[in-house]
Amino acid sequence: MADCLSFLRLYNIEKKDVIETDERIIFGDYSWSKFSNTNYLKYGTGRDGATKEYYTLASLVFLLKNVDLPHSVYAQKAIASGLPLVSRPDRKDLLAYLNGETSSSASIDKSAPLELGQQHVVPAAPLSQVKRSLEDGTNSEASKRAKADEDIKVDKNRLEARLEANVKDKVVTTNQLRPLSERMSAEKIAALKAKRIAHKRETIKDDTITEIEQRSFADAEVDVSKDIISKEKVVRTRETVMRSAKKSFTNILDVITNIQLREQGRSFNSNHKASPPPAVVAKKEPPPKKPVAPIPYSRYDQERFAGKEETEGFKIDTMGTYRGMNFQSVSAGVTGSKRRPDPSQKEIRTSVAKPLSVNQPKSGHTKRESKTPIIVVPSTATSIITLLNVKDFLQDFKFVSNNDKKANGAPRESEVLIQRKKDLGNTSLTIPFKVVDSVNKLQKNDWERVVAVFVQGPTWQFKGWPWLQSDNSPVNIFAKVKGFHLKFEDARIEPNIQKWDVHILQINRHKRHLDRACALRFWEVLDKFVGKQNKTGLRY
Image (cartoon, rainbow, N blue to C red; front, side, top):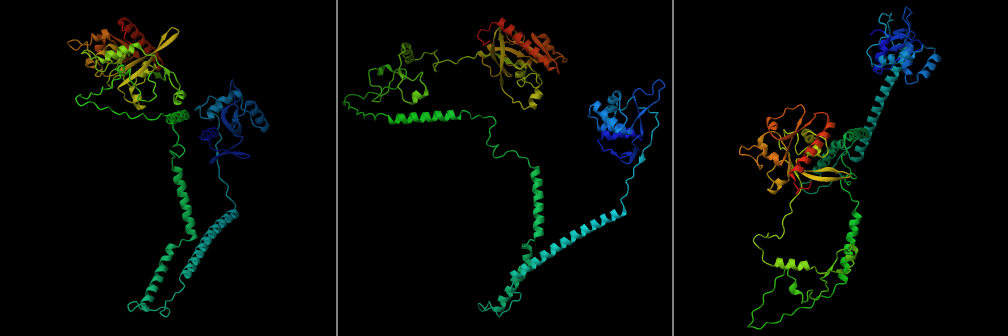
């Protein structure tokens, strides 16, 4: 790499600075003349015996400096500078080589004579300038050291002055003291006072911090604090804590308004409340007669009180209703409209009052049976379709592997509800499907709603199913429930799958745009099967 073209390419790729003087171009420790020829041939030269012409180093450096300009503007500037112009046919290939996009070029003539670079020596500075710089450095160091010594001397003088101010009496004499008792003489008091002063001289230096120490400590504390604050990561502030990401309080004003209306209705009723009912005085029964037992209350036997006072003095309209009235009318205490007696209610009350028969349920009503179809999927982790990804495949028409769902933190559920949009000509219908992976919780009536099952292969998958043969073969199951087997295109088919009446669905491992066609094929086969079964009790 001794030629100037290779040096220019290296410096251009590594974004190093190329120094250009009046006569030479410097690459670090080596330099070449600005008019040195490179080994890059000009376009159209060297062919059919023509003379070979090469680009100069200065012209290539000028091209790199003006590479962002249009070629016409670059050509005008190059001509104005008196430099050879890089032609348009050579521009693209030359820039690709200099930028490192290509390792070589067909226009590079390896047999061209190369001019060796000269070693560039940095000119030494004049002796007077070196001497002056040394003197300046020496003077600066000496001045810093002298300033530090002066600051230390000032601090020492300040400390001595403080010690002298705090300790006025350097010599303790007994002339100024008087004995307190026989044990505490003046000599003992003087000794204790001298000991206290000596101890104070030793400890006052630890309690006094000079200004230089204070400044250095403050600067160090600021530096440490900045370093700590730069590494801190703000998770929450007092403003972000008050924000709620998944809650909306847009209807809070409506809630407050309803509460106010409710309170106003209560106060209105309390102001217009009637007087309390008069006390009922029980009549004394004659002694020979036995007391009559009170009739228990029954909501279904109100006809016996038709001729009596039902409200016990309260103004209650037992035949009124608030049906069809708004909240404001109810809270304002407006009387409801009269309700017509329903003749069928009398028959119902009479029938309920009768003793229940053996076949009649004690609760008085039966549980409503569900009409949602059921799909069963395998519960093993080796199956490519489970409760984790069945909704993505059958509802969103996109296959997502179980590992990807677990990596994204998908929760493990006991059942999944998917919504299938079914086109009915000009309109569409949404049908819910319940997907489970265990049949242990299915009741006897629930088996009539099972319409499909994804088969994995082993026979133990159908443990606990009805319609099994004596050898636990699930052949009869596929006559009542449509079986499906989902597999990859390059995977082999289980031997049991080939024996059973199971529809095979194949998907590609990588081409996700083909998943929609496979999922639509599942719903098409299932619609035909359910239509033949004639299951009218399902929501289908």
